[in-house]
Length: 344
Ligand SMILES: *[C@@H]1O[C@H](CO)[C@@H](O)[C@H](O)[C@H]1NC(C)=O
Ligand SMILES: *[C@@H]1O[C@H](CO)[C@@H](O)[C@H](O)[C@H]1NC(C)=O
Ligand SMILES: *[C@@H]1O[C@H](CO)[C@@H](O)[C@H](O)[C@H]1NC(C)=O
Ligand SMILES: *[C@@H]1O[C@H](CO)[C@@H](O)[C@H](O)[C@H]1NC(C)=O
Ligand SMILES: *[C@@H]1O[C@H](CO)[C@@H](O)[C@H](O)[C@H]1NC(C)=O
Ligand SMILES: *[C@@H]1O[C@H](CO)[C@@H](O)[C@H](O)[C@H]1NC(C)=O
Ligand SMILES: *[C@@H]1O[C@H](CO)[C@@H](O)[C@H](O)[C@H]1NC(C)=O
Image (cartoon, rainbow, N blue to C red; front, side, top):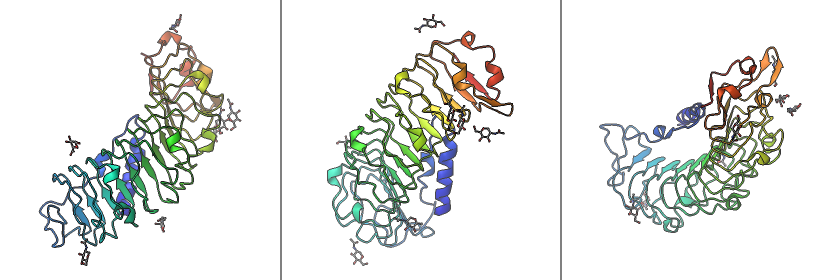
């Protein structure tokens, strides 16, 4: 399974090169065709004899989580009508690593004690599109992936993720999280590479995020500024997305994007009037649909030496008050590698 996961992560990093990504298709392998189910399998589910550690219960109109037999490591329960996780169902599932509960109707108060909190080997908890108002748990410290997209989370206690040294990806988009509700929640997560808090109610970028972070997605919030030195504390960060927020020029301190790790910066759909100053190592800059009316060449054209100049390949400026005639004559000279410059 480790190699499969490496593949998932590779796919994820690779897809991130685009402005939007979609990797859900990799997650839910269905039961192998024509496989014979093992005798201990839950009624209504399928446990293929050639993959005896997996139990497939997806798309079966289930109302409850069935009792999971011992030995199951991968449990697929997505796309049902499950509303409740009753005590006892996981009593023998002490080896469970992956628990997939996406697209059900589970509320936080219907997760009984002694269920998810007893899964001490859990590595992936995929629980998107349910009705959770707080994260389930306490969750196992062995978790490496947590996906709670499209719930109603308004609370996220600061100790929810503490000690999860192997946690690499956290998806919390499409919830009701505020800046206060996530304060301190991501501190000390040594392995975290992706944090997605887009489509929430944040007024600020999350504080205390670990230096291992590669991707930070905070689109569709109410963020108006980036704290001075924020990126300097994230030396591995390559992708920063803050589109569809309330960013204004005064919220961007001088030099805040002067870091050499950043490859993609998405500030589209904000209220910027000027092009922010970047470092020559940035490759993709999205600034479409802002209020920019001046082309500040010196902010994006960093000519270091004849062999070292701006690596910008994508520059989107459409939906601003700019035309090709606003572009200074020496632009093409500087943006030599740019393959996609879009104005209108
Ligand atoms: C979830 O519950 C609501 C009623 O609370 C119901 O209308 C809806 O069909 C249910 N959805 C699923 C996927 O079971
Ligand atoms: C757990 O396994 C034991 C031994 O096989 C069995 O007696 C018991 O009924 C099982 N418990 C559940 C909740 O399935
Ligand atoms: C993290 O992963 C390593 C290597 O797989 C493992 O030895 C360690 O126990 C894990 N940490 C936790 C808290 O589960
Ligand atoms: C960017 O930061 C470096 C130090 O890391 C500094 O030498 C350089 O002058 C800064 N550039 C600008 C334009 O402030
Ligand atoms: C870009 O960042 C590198 C590394 O911090 C720094 O040495 C360089 O001066 C920066 N470039 C500019 C134009 O500030
Ligand atoms: C180009 O500049 C970067 C820092 O901005 C530096 O790391 C790199 O070594 C330079 N390359 C050359 C060929 O001068
Ligand atoms: C748009 O740009 C033109 C000049 O390029 C300027 O005269 C005009 O005031 C700008 N409009 C707005 C709304 O900024």
